[in-house]
Length: 234
Ligand code: SF4
Image (cartoon, rainbow, N blue to C red; front, side):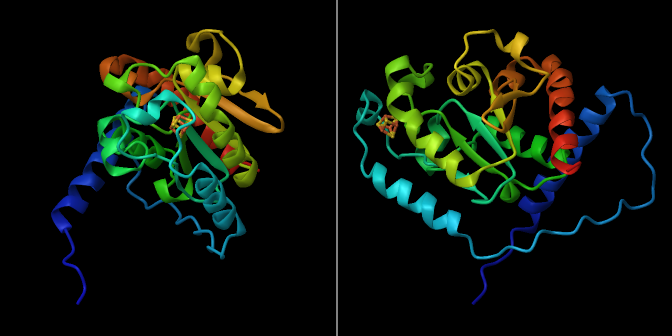
């Protein structure tokens, strides 16, 4: 028998996405919205993916990883989620409490905001790939330390090699520093593309930072608009 559909939850999620989209548009100075429907974007046909198997092989290589001290306090290894053939990958710093519990990146409050940001650039969460620099939760949500990043980042680099996205959006200082191998401030890094090989990398603020400093949403939206333009204008 089919599972009952949670219409109320679905409706609340749609309303939350719509509210974020309108908030972001208002930050851009848009005050009116046309009543005509936007053209429906063709959904990419999903083919069986070899990348899916390659990602699975990386996860199997990790096993019950004890390569750094974060293994001691984690509940779950949070490997990554989304489209194995994604053109756009989001990279955060590490799992928090909700992610550690559920085994999926960006599922807590910051994750819900990230989902709304993804929707605001007219993508669905299932179309992108989402991962973190370290795959186990640092105790008390502290920043991952250099030795932990050093131990874990080879897995993320292998994931990126498999997926071969055109664009990576790094969320926050830790992810931007680790992937771009720089110590420049996030304020200096954000707002322009950097190169990781041939991949364009856009650093922006972490959604949990935006929850604390909502006034930074305007700059984040500017960054994401550049990502959207790059993604859709091939
Ligand atoms: S953070 Fe990465 S390297 Fe450290 S134990 Fe977890 S999976 Fe292994």
